Length: 332
Picture 1 (cartoon, helix red, strand yellow):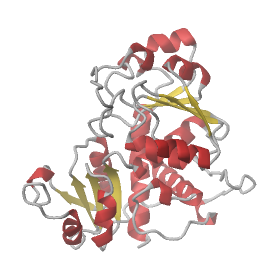
Picture 2: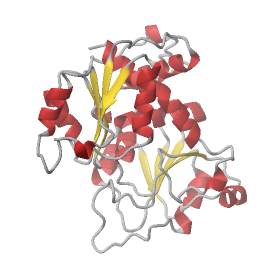
Picture 3: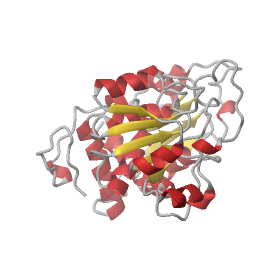
């Protein structure tokens, strides 16, 4: 699949070799650092790996360190699967609380990066502190990939989500893209940054009443002249939007602190949850995405519907992570 840059509609990029990249970058820390050429290149490379158009075993003899100070299933296994598919080996610790880089021992994450970067060819890090990945990149001598730093960013997941939505919708240009659930998560923050390249007609949020949309997300949409609409019932998104990116109703565990005095109900109120009954009753054609894990915001009754894209999103994630590792380990 060839991608057309929204920034230059007349330019059809017919092959991977013909497209130009942005200036070389060493790390993947923030979606803000990416250009439209970067996004197109990552998506095309992921397509090429999936289709078998390029050799996979290009990182034989290379080592990827997986440093997950915060729990993870999909991201950790996803990067490990991608590294293995490329011929690389992975190292890491099953329980990073046993590492000396913790509160009880006190080794700095800067020193941790300086040490691990001399034992591996790349570092994939998830940490509960915002800017932790950037701090590690400052002392690492190898590429650092931010796999989630507190509530701040998760750029590789945003690339996966863009790739999955391009695949499902054909193009995001002129489309209505909705976000359901807690709007404060790092995935939302990174994905909004990449939507600036995609030319959607509007971005719609259906947030819980007790959480306001973060100012930086509102500012990013305004800066790139993307229409913002707030709704109060997910049914509206199912009827009026082309795609709905769901998230848990409350992400205080990994997001910003909970609103003052707010106590999470630990379930998703009906007006914010998606069910097969709703989709059928409304005749919804909206595609459903979710970075996972889900709780009750998307009922399992939706899983077999043609709207459900979230498990396909997981399948595609392997190829996008392969593209990220390949670029950072072959261009530095």
